Amino acid sequence: MNVDWDEAICGIRIIKIRNLMRELGSLEVDLAWVASQLEVSWSKSEAVVVELIEREWIKQVESSPASNPLFKIANHGRSLAAARSIPRITRAKAEQILKGFMRRVHEVNADDDFGMYVHEVYLFGSFLDPSKNSLGDLDLIAWLSLRRIVGRQAHDYEIERQELLGVRRWNKDFLVHEVKCYLKAREPHISIGSTTLLDRPIPKLLIYSAPPEVCSEHEHRGHESCWLGGRGVARRS
Image (cartoon, rainbow, N blue to C red):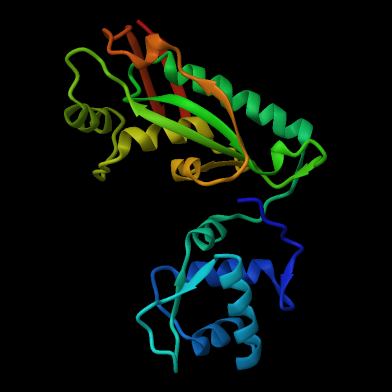
């Protein structure tokens, strides 16, 4: 999510609103709670709530009483909660980051040890506006699909992969998690959005589609790879 950290909402800095979203989490709260968290008056909290609803960062709980309405976080609010205050980058720097990201996309799709492959990659957000040279982050959508290897069962392979990499806590979405970690490579300026954004009427640009040999079922191509400590290591046998 591209956030202007110099912005203020009703006189309240955006970083404080971001922290409010983090505190909100899965709660359903009233105006008194908002006023307490932001340390503002009741009337100021009302103005803030109106603005947050308009931005679709929060929404009113439909079943709450009109006399004391309750509010909960909305999808855009979750994106704000996850946003980090990092230095802005130039377009040239963003292009370098994108180049590295796409290199890793090709590495993932060339390595059958990854349980998922990158089916498509889309760009969206401020990078699509050529007039903007100062960017908060690089907004990408990576549509991942299950890699179909002859004789490989997805559930069994997910367990096998976690055991191989020494993952102690079971993660049912580990194959997706592993690929996304590899693609992001701990780059703070990469923001990988949900594929649900593909259904929304926002400007986006398709920049990569996997070739048929990656998408179709095939024999394992003899790679041995691992993702450890934030570093990708791939070896061809």
